[in-house]
Length: 148
Image (cartoon, one colour):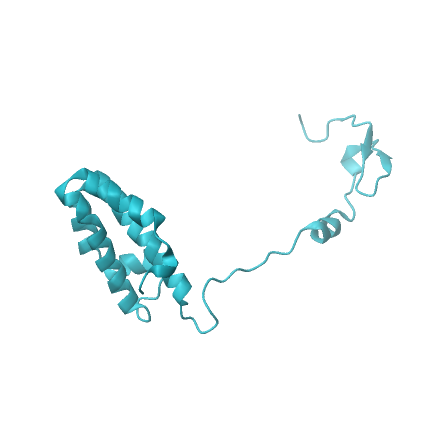
């Protein structure tokens, strides 16, 4: 379709419910469209998972620790010794980025995550069923009972 060609739209329903007949599309103007669109657009909410002081609560740390342990145990099923090396030799910066932690403030917590992940990959070194058992254990573990 070329610009300026005749288009027959017939009766068109507008936002206010009135029907408008468009006779010449070249001279048509859209009035009030932007204002109505802005009125109808919902406001976006902001969600923050950290407390006002910037410190993670114990519940948040427990949830992160459960996720980290479960992830490590799951990968140990497939990777056996390689997963132990990967989780043991990862840098603190990588762990902080993965779990959205502050490298300076959460230094001890990052070290604990690395230690726990390495420990959770050890059962798969002996036999693969150990990795499956570790994953099931961590998936069912209540995060409130984790020490962080």
